[in-house]
Amino acid sequence: MSLCPDRLQASQATPAPGSTPGSASRALAIETLGLRKHFGKLTAVDGLTISVPAGTVAGFIGPNGAGKTTTIRLLLGLIRPDAGSATILGQPLTNALGYLPRVGALIEAPAFYPSLSARTNLDVLARLGGYSSSRVREVLDLVELSDRARDRVGSYSLGMKQRLGVAMALLPDPDLLILDEPANGLDPLGIIATRDLLRRLREQGKTIFLSSHLLGELEQVADWLVMLHQGKALYNGPVRAFLDQHPGASFEERFLSLLKGEQQ
Ligand SMILES: Nc1ncnc2c1ncn2[C@@H]1O[C@H](COP(=O)(O)OP(=O)(O)OP(=O)(O)O)[C@@H](O)[C@H]1O
Ligand SMILES: [Mg+2]
Image (cartoon, rainbow, N blue to C red):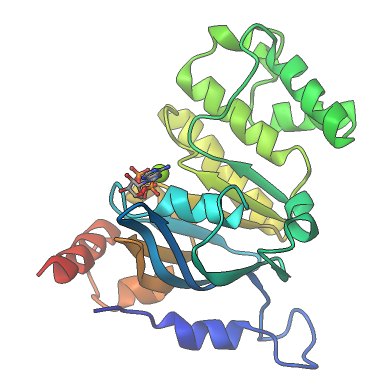
């Protein structure tokens, strides 16, 4: 069974030829068509077709091993698909140079120079990418790390490293921000700060695609949802429609009932 009311949504969201931006039709930041990835005998991503409208916070949910990180690695060109296609910010996956400069990403545990400060870690990246040092200060402020920016990253807590990872992803002021479990290790205040940050970024017109197991948190911030199970989309559409299918059910109950339906 595959519940995908999104195909209608997606076609509505795709600009008709000649339509003007900002009208009822919205461009897609991410679109995949039959994306597939095997690791030996295991099919991690299994003919995945999803669509994420530009300007949304899109939650990417699914149980452990559903294929979320693999999908994100495919979208970022870190691994190649075995079949299918994808378009990111209007560019095909095969033209990574056409979209990667406009994409910021944080995947699982990001790598840093542990003996250098957060500030110097970001300065190194900024120099490589041609970003200004004022941008480094901005992103440190955005993730609320300015106070500890001169400390060695090796001395950071898990949540602080995660914030630094988000700061790195924000460095290019990306149109599309892809975050793989950004709330990993964050304390409640950090989670609230991240929620506010994501909302501010959406207000600036950016698209955020984030995987998370914190369903209650996602419910508060996401307006679009992609739910994955065994490499396939169980749901791809607005959060509102996800909840409206079972009025009165919580986000988590809805998630579990869809999963159960799949396992029967
Ligand atoms: N490099 C790899 N080699 C072999 N198998 C892999 C590799 N990467 C992922 N897999 C397998 O692909 C499947 C999907 O993994 P993936 O990391 O994408 O899941 P996930 O949805 O991100 O899970 P989680 O919620 O635990 O982060 C898993 O069965 C995993 O073991
Ligand atoms: Mg993962």
